Length: 309
Ligand SMILES: [Mg+2]
Image 1 (spheres, helix red, strand yellow):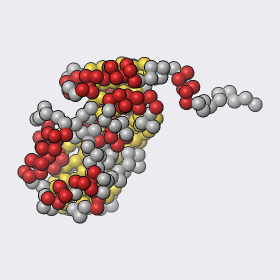
Image 2: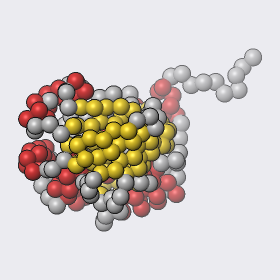
Image 3: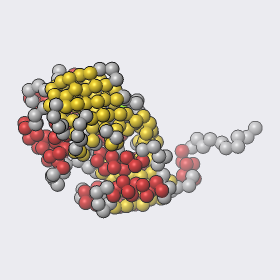
Image 4: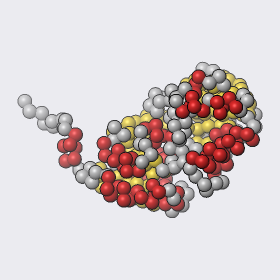
C-alpha cells in the first residue's frame, strides 16, 4: 500500500517547500560593523530558496517589540534579533507563547545566549547557520512578571549593568574596565534567598538566577544551566576578599566556576530574594529598578528558538 504522504527523508527536498518568511530586526544606532553589514551578508549567505526576508530598522526604544508584534501579525515564521542579550530580550518577550521562532545574529557587548547556542562571532557564519538550524523549544524566566531569556542577577552584575547604561562605549574593554572599577567600589548586601526547598541568608557579592549558562566572552556563571529543563540554576558568590573572584576567572572560562570556594549553587523553579536595602538588578544585561522583593518564576517551554545544527 502506498503512503498518502511519504515522509521526506532527503533534506535537500525541503527546498521544494514554500519559502519561510524571515525578518531581521536591526538597531542601526547600535553602530557595530554587524549592524552596518547585515544586508550585504543576508544577500550573500542566506539560502534564498528557503527564505524570503525583510530587514527592519528600529527607530526608538521599545520599537523592536512593536516590530516583532507586527511580524507575528503579518505571518512571519522567524524573527531574528540582531544584537546582544538585551535586544534578544525585547524580541523574545513578544514571541513567548507564540509559534513564531526566534533567530539570533549576535551583535552586542554581551552575547551569552548566542554564544551558548553556537552562533559564533562571525556575521557571515551566523547568517549561514540559519540555513541549517533546527527549532528548539526553551524555557524563559520571569522576574516580578518581566521576562528574561538568559540571566537575571542582583548585586555586582546589576551594578555593572547600571554603570554600562550611562556609557556609549561598548565592547569587551569598557565592560572589563567597568567591572574592575565596580569590583573595587561595590558594597555587597545581605540577602535572603528562598526556593521551594531551602532558605539561605548570606552576605552576597552577586546572586544570579540563570536560565542559560553564560554572560558574553565565554564567562560561564552557571555551567550546569540547561535551557529546557524547567529549572533555574541559582548561583551565589559569598562575600570574600575580592582577589578570590579574580583568581577564579580562568576556572569560570573553563566551566569550572562551581569549584571555587566562595560559590554556592542549587536549582529551583521559584526563587524569592529579599535584600536588606535596595539592590542593583539586571535582566539579560539591562539594568532595571525593582522596589521590594524579587520573585522569579520559570516558564517552561515558552519560546521557540532556531539553534545552529
Ligand atoms: Mg534551566
